[in-house]
Length: 335
Image (cartoon, rainbow, N blue to C red; front, side, top):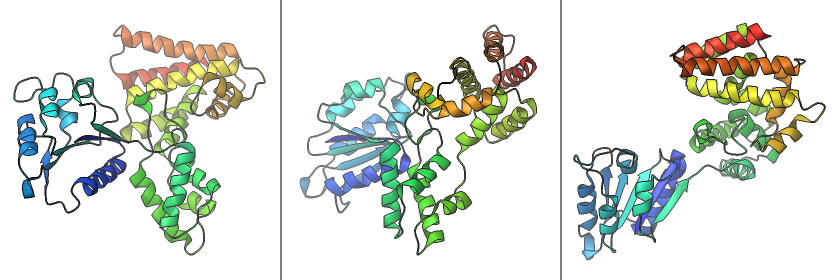
Protein backbone atom coordinates (compact mmCIF):
# COMPACT_ATOMS: atom_id res chain seq x y z
CA UNK A 1 0.00 0.00 0.00
CA UNK A 2 1.10 3.55 -0.70
CA UNK A 3 -0.35 6.45 1.29
CA UNK A 4 0.42 10.14 0.92
CA UNK A 5 -0.45 12.38 3.87
CA UNK A 6 -0.44 16.11 3.16
CA UNK A 7 -1.18 19.33 5.08
CA UNK A 8 -1.61 22.20 5.20
CA UNK A 9 -2.37 21.58 8.89
CA UNK A 10 0.57 19.94 10.63
CA UNK A 11 -1.46 18.62 13.57
CA UNK A 12 -4.12 17.00 11.38
CA UNK A 13 -1.49 15.45 9.09
CA UNK A 14 0.33 13.85 12.02
CA UNK A 15 -2.94 12.60 13.49
CA UNK A 16 -3.66 10.91 10.16
CA UNK A 17 -0.18 9.36 10.23
CA UNK A 18 -0.81 7.91 13.70
CA UNK A 19 -4.13 6.50 12.53
CA UNK A 20 -2.49 4.86 9.52
CA UNK A 21 0.31 3.35 11.60
CA UNK A 22 -2.20 1.94 14.11
CA UNK A 23 -3.94 0.30 11.15
CA UNK A 24 -0.92 -1.25 9.37
CA UNK A 25 1.59 -1.81 12.21
CA UNK A 26 -0.09 -1.49 15.64
CA UNK A 27 2.97 -2.46 17.70
CA UNK A 28 5.47 -0.55 15.55
CA UNK A 29 7.76 -3.56 15.15
CA UNK A 30 7.96 -3.32 11.34
CA UNK A 31 8.09 0.45 10.91
CA UNK A 32 11.12 2.40 9.72
CA UNK A 33 11.35 6.20 9.45
CA UNK A 34 13.50 8.09 6.94
CA UNK A 35 14.23 11.79 6.68
CA UNK A 36 13.06 12.92 3.25
CA UNK A 37 15.24 16.03 3.45
CA UNK A 38 18.32 13.87 2.86
CA UNK A 39 17.13 10.39 1.78
CA UNK A 40 17.60 9.26 -1.82
CA UNK A 41 14.77 7.58 -3.69
CA UNK A 42 16.80 4.38 -3.89
CA UNK A 43 17.18 4.42 -0.09
CA UNK A 44 13.41 4.61 0.26
CA UNK A 45 12.82 1.80 -2.24
CA UNK A 46 15.43 -0.44 -0.57
CA UNK A 47 13.84 0.14 2.85
CA UNK A 48 10.37 -0.68 1.52
CA UNK A 49 11.68 -3.82 -0.21
CA UNK A 50 13.36 -5.27 2.88
CA UNK A 51 11.76 -8.12 4.79
CA UNK A 52 10.16 -7.38 8.14
CA UNK A 53 9.45 -9.69 11.07
CA UNK A 54 7.76 -13.01 10.22
CA UNK A 55 8.61 -12.42 6.52
CA UNK A 56 6.03 -9.66 6.30
CA UNK A 57 6.57 -6.44 4.42
CA UNK A 58 7.96 -3.31 5.99
CA UNK A 59 6.19 -0.07 6.83
CA UNK A 60 8.33 2.89 5.74
CA UNK A 61 7.50 6.46 6.69
CA UNK A 62 9.30 9.25 4.81
CA UNK A 63 8.76 12.88 5.79
CA UNK A 64 9.30 15.82 3.39
CA UNK A 65 10.45 13.74 0.41
CA UNK A 66 7.80 15.19 -1.90
CA UNK A 67 8.51 18.73 -0.69
CA UNK A 68 12.19 18.24 -1.61
CA UNK A 69 12.01 16.17 -4.80
CA UNK A 70 8.52 16.90 -6.10
CA UNK A 71 9.19 20.47 -7.16
CA UNK A 72 10.24 21.38 -10.67
CA UNK A 73 13.98 21.20 -11.26
CA UNK A 74 14.66 18.99 -8.21
CA UNK A 75 17.53 16.50 -8.49
CA UNK A 76 18.00 13.06 -6.92
CA UNK A 77 21.72 12.28 -6.98
CA UNK A 78 22.06 14.63 -9.94
CA UNK A 79 19.21 13.06 -11.90
CA UNK A 80 15.56 13.99 -12.37
CA UNK A 81 13.59 12.17 -9.63
CA UNK A 82 11.98 8.98 -11.01
CA UNK A 83 8.71 8.92 -9.10
CA UNK A 84 7.30 6.15 -11.28
CA UNK A 85 10.19 3.79 -10.41
CA UNK A 86 9.72 4.47 -6.71
CA UNK A 87 5.95 4.33 -6.47
CA UNK A 88 5.52 1.38 -8.83
CA UNK A 89 8.38 -0.52 -7.21
CA UNK A 90 7.00 -0.82 -3.66
CA UNK A 91 6.22 -4.53 -2.98
CA UNK A 92 2.56 -5.36 -2.42
CA UNK A 93 3.34 -6.65 1.09
CA UNK A 94 4.95 -3.38 2.16
CA UNK A 95 3.49 0.01 3.06
CA UNK A 96 5.07 3.30 2.04
CA UNK A 97 3.76 6.43 3.76
CA UNK A 98 4.93 9.78 2.40
CA UNK A 99 4.26 12.47 4.99
CA UNK A 100 4.44 16.06 3.75
CA UNK A 101 2.54 18.37 6.15
CA UNK A 102 3.93 21.52 4.49
CA UNK A 103 2.13 20.74 1.23
CA UNK A 104 -1.57 21.23 0.52
CA UNK A 105 -1.57 19.54 -2.90
CA UNK A 106 0.42 16.96 -4.84
CA UNK A 107 2.90 18.12 -7.48
CA UNK A 108 1.91 16.97 -10.98
CA UNK A 109 4.87 14.58 -11.35
CA UNK A 110 3.99 12.71 -8.15
CA UNK A 111 0.27 12.67 -8.89
CA UNK A 112 0.89 11.18 -12.33
CA UNK A 113 3.10 8.40 -10.94
CA UNK A 114 0.80 7.33 -8.08
CA UNK A 115 -0.84 3.90 -8.48
CA UNK A 116 -4.62 3.96 -8.79
CA UNK A 117 -5.07 2.31 -5.39
CA UNK A 118 -2.83 4.79 -3.53
CA UNK A 119 -4.42 6.73 -0.69
CA UNK A 120 -4.06 10.52 -0.61
CA UNK A 121 -5.08 12.04 2.72
CA UNK A 122 -5.36 15.80 3.20
CA UNK A 123 -4.83 17.42 6.58
CA UNK A 124 -7.22 20.17 5.55
CA UNK A 125 -8.61 22.16 8.51
CA UNK A 126 -12.39 22.38 8.85
CA UNK A 127 -14.09 25.69 8.11
CA UNK A 128 -17.45 27.24 8.85
CA UNK A 129 -20.03 25.07 10.61
CA UNK A 130 -17.63 22.10 10.64
CA UNK A 131 -15.02 24.17 12.50
CA UNK A 132 -17.64 25.27 15.05
CA UNK A 133 -18.54 21.62 15.68
CA UNK A 134 -14.85 20.77 16.10
CA UNK A 135 -14.35 23.56 18.65
CA UNK A 136 -17.36 22.41 20.66
CA UNK A 137 -16.16 18.80 20.60
CA UNK A 138 -12.70 19.88 21.75
CA UNK A 139 -14.26 21.80 24.66
CA UNK A 140 -16.25 18.69 25.61
CA UNK A 141 -12.99 16.69 25.69
CA UNK A 142 -11.64 19.33 28.08
CA UNK A 143 -14.68 18.81 30.31
CA UNK A 144 -16.48 22.12 29.75
CA UNK A 145 -19.39 23.39 27.66
CA UNK A 146 -19.10 25.67 24.65
CA UNK A 147 -22.11 26.94 22.72
CA UNK A 148 -22.24 27.75 18.99
CA UNK A 149 -22.19 31.52 19.52
CA UNK A 150 -19.06 31.48 21.67
CA UNK A 151 -17.32 28.95 19.42
CA UNK A 152 -17.95 31.25 16.47
CA UNK A 153 -16.52 34.18 18.45
CA UNK A 154 -13.31 32.18 19.00
CA UNK A 155 -13.05 31.41 15.28
CA UNK A 156 -13.79 35.00 14.23
CA UNK A 157 -11.32 36.41 16.76
CA UNK A 158 -8.40 34.22 15.66
CA UNK A 159 -9.13 33.83 11.94
CA UNK A 160 -11.47 36.71 11.03
CA UNK A 161 -11.19 36.33 7.25
CA UNK A 162 -10.54 32.61 6.81
CA UNK A 163 -12.51 30.69 9.43
CA UNK A 164 -15.64 30.43 7.27
CA UNK A 165 -14.16 29.53 3.87
CA UNK A 166 -10.93 29.33 1.93
CA UNK A 167 -9.64 32.46 0.23
CA UNK A 168 -10.13 32.61 -3.54
CA UNK A 169 -6.37 33.06 -3.90
CA UNK A 170 -4.60 30.15 -2.10
CA UNK A 171 -1.50 32.32 -1.66
CA UNK A 172 -3.44 34.60 0.68
CA UNK A 173 -5.32 31.88 2.55
CA UNK A 174 -4.51 31.47 6.22
CA UNK A 175 -6.16 28.22 7.32
CA UNK A 176 -7.01 27.68 10.99
CA UNK A 177 -4.18 25.99 12.88
CA UNK A 178 -5.78 23.13 14.78
CA UNK A 179 -2.92 22.74 17.27
CA UNK A 180 -3.16 26.45 18.14
CA UNK A 181 -6.95 26.24 18.48
CA UNK A 182 -6.61 23.15 20.66
CA UNK A 183 -4.30 25.10 22.97
CA UNK A 184 -6.71 28.04 23.13
CA UNK A 185 -9.61 25.76 24.05
CA UNK A 186 -7.51 24.17 26.82
CA UNK A 187 -6.65 27.64 28.16
CA UNK A 188 -10.27 28.79 28.05
CA UNK A 189 -11.46 25.59 29.70
CA UNK A 190 -9.08 26.13 32.59
CA UNK A 191 -10.23 29.74 32.97
CA UNK A 192 -13.94 28.90 32.90
CA UNK A 193 -13.88 25.75 35.03
CA UNK A 194 -16.29 24.47 36.26
CA UNK A 195 -18.67 26.60 34.18
CA UNK A 196 -19.01 26.93 30.41
CA UNK A 197 -16.67 28.99 28.24
CA UNK A 198 -18.33 32.40 27.95
CA UNK A 199 -17.84 35.23 25.40
CA UNK A 200 -16.08 37.33 28.04
CA UNK A 201 -13.45 34.61 28.50
CA UNK A 202 -12.76 34.80 24.77
CA UNK A 203 -12.51 38.60 24.77
CA UNK A 204 -10.15 38.58 27.75
CA UNK A 205 -7.88 35.67 26.81
CA UNK A 206 -7.87 34.97 23.08
CA UNK A 207 -5.42 37.04 21.00
CA UNK A 208 -6.78 38.63 17.85
CA UNK A 209 -5.56 37.07 14.63
CA UNK A 210 -2.85 38.56 12.43
CA UNK A 211 -5.43 39.07 9.69
CA UNK A 212 -7.20 41.59 11.89
CA UNK A 213 -3.98 43.61 12.07
CA UNK A 214 -3.56 43.38 8.29
CA UNK A 215 -7.04 44.77 7.70
CA UNK A 216 -6.44 47.57 10.19
CA UNK A 217 -3.59 48.68 7.93
CA UNK A 218 -5.61 48.19 4.73
CA UNK A 219 -8.58 50.16 6.05
CA UNK A 220 -6.28 53.04 7.05
CA UNK A 221 -4.55 52.99 3.67
CA UNK A 222 -7.75 52.94 1.61
CA UNK A 223 -9.36 55.69 3.68
CA UNK A 224 -6.32 57.96 3.13
CA UNK A 225 -5.25 57.92 6.78
CA UNK A 226 -1.53 58.37 6.08
CA UNK A 227 -0.31 58.43 9.68
CA UNK A 228 -2.35 55.40 10.74
CA UNK A 229 -1.42 53.44 7.62
CA UNK A 230 2.32 54.05 8.03
CA UNK A 231 2.28 53.07 11.71
CA UNK A 232 0.32 49.85 11.02
CA UNK A 233 2.49 49.03 8.01
CA UNK A 234 5.65 49.27 10.07
CA UNK A 235 4.16 46.91 12.68
CA UNK A 236 3.34 44.37 9.97
CA UNK A 237 6.79 44.57 8.38
CA UNK A 238 8.43 44.18 11.81
CA UNK A 239 6.25 41.07 12.33
CA UNK A 240 7.54 39.58 9.07
CA UNK A 241 4.56 40.18 6.76
CA UNK A 242 5.27 39.88 3.02
CA UNK A 243 5.10 43.33 1.31
CA UNK A 244 3.97 41.67 -1.95
CA UNK A 245 0.99 40.15 -0.18
CA UNK A 246 0.11 43.45 1.49
CA UNK A 247 0.25 45.40 -1.77
CA UNK A 248 -1.95 42.83 -3.49
CA UNK A 249 -4.49 43.00 -0.67
CA UNK A 250 -4.60 46.82 -0.73
CA UNK A 251 -5.20 46.67 -4.49
CA UNK A 252 -7.97 44.11 -4.07
CA UNK A 253 -9.57 46.25 -1.36
CA UNK A 254 -9.50 49.27 -3.70
CA UNK A 255 -11.23 47.25 -6.42
CA UNK A 256 -13.97 46.22 -4.00
CA UNK A 257 -14.21 49.79 -2.67
CA UNK A 258 -15.11 51.19 -6.08
CA UNK A 259 -17.84 48.56 -6.42
CA UNK A 260 -19.18 49.60 -3.01
CA UNK A 261 -18.99 53.28 -3.94
CA UNK A 262 -21.35 52.63 -6.88
CA UNK A 263 -23.66 50.29 -4.94
CA UNK A 264 -25.95 53.07 -3.76
CA UNK A 265 -28.09 52.03 -0.80
CA UNK A 266 -27.69 48.31 -1.31
CA UNK A 267 -26.67 46.32 1.76
CA UNK A 268 -22.91 45.63 1.81
CA UNK A 269 -23.38 41.95 2.63
CA UNK A 270 -25.75 41.56 -0.33
CA UNK A 271 -23.13 43.09 -2.62
CA UNK A 272 -20.51 40.71 -1.20
CA UNK A 273 -22.72 37.69 -1.87
CA UNK A 274 -23.30 38.77 -5.46
CA UNK A 275 -19.55 39.13 -5.96
CA UNK A 276 -19.08 35.60 -4.60
CA UNK A 277 -16.80 36.65 -1.74
CA UNK A 278 -15.97 33.85 0.77
CA UNK A 279 -16.89 36.31 3.55
CA UNK A 280 -19.60 38.70 2.22
CA UNK A 281 -19.60 40.61 5.53
CA UNK A 282 -16.21 41.98 4.52
CA UNK A 283 -18.04 44.55 2.35
CA UNK A 284 -19.35 46.26 5.49
CA UNK A 285 -15.81 47.17 6.56
CA UNK A 286 -15.07 48.31 3.02
CA UNK A 287 -18.11 50.58 3.12
CA UNK A 288 -16.81 52.09 6.37
CA UNK A 289 -13.38 52.68 4.86
CA UNK A 290 -14.96 54.39 1.84
CA UNK A 291 -17.06 56.54 4.17
CA UNK A 292 -18.47 59.59 2.40
CA UNK A 293 -15.90 59.62 -0.40
CA UNK A 294 -17.37 60.21 -3.83
CA UNK A 295 -17.07 57.51 -6.52
CA UNK A 296 -14.59 59.80 -8.30
CA UNK A 297 -12.36 59.98 -5.23
CA UNK A 298 -12.51 56.19 -4.77
CA UNK A 299 -11.59 55.85 -8.44
CA UNK A 300 -8.62 58.11 -7.72
CA UNK A 301 -7.48 55.66 -5.05
CA UNK A 302 -7.59 52.84 -7.57
CA UNK A 303 -5.76 55.08 -10.04
CA UNK A 304 -2.98 55.68 -7.50
CA UNK A 305 -2.53 51.94 -7.10
CA UNK A 306 -2.56 51.47 -10.88
CA UNK A 307 0.24 54.03 -11.19
CA UNK A 308 2.20 52.23 -8.48
CA UNK A 309 1.80 48.95 -10.37
CA UNK A 310 3.01 50.67 -13.57
CA UNK A 311 6.05 52.03 -11.73
CA UNK A 312 6.94 48.53 -10.53
CA UNK A 313 6.57 46.98 -13.99
CA UNK A 314 8.61 49.67 -15.70
CA UNK A 315 11.38 49.47 -13.10
CA UNK A 316 10.81 52.96 -11.74
CA UNK A 317 10.23 51.36 -8.32
CA UNK A 318 12.22 48.20 -7.67
CA UNK A 319 11.41 47.42 -4.05
CA UNK A 320 7.88 46.31 -3.10
CA UNK A 321 8.09 48.00 0.29
CA UNK A 322 8.95 51.28 -1.44
CA UNK A 323 5.93 50.70 -3.68
CA UNK A 324 3.70 50.23 -0.64
CA UNK A 325 4.82 53.51 0.89
CA UNK A 326 4.38 55.27 -2.46
CA UNK A 327 0.86 53.86 -2.83
CA UNK A 328 -0.16 54.86 0.69
CA UNK A 329 1.18 58.40 0.16
CA UNK A 330 -0.54 58.73 -3.23
CA UNK A 331 -3.89 57.59 -1.82
CA UNK A 332 -3.61 60.11 1.02
CA UNK A 333 -2.68 62.88 -1.41
CA UNK A 334 -5.67 61.98 -3.59
CA UNK A 335 -7.97 62.32 -0.62
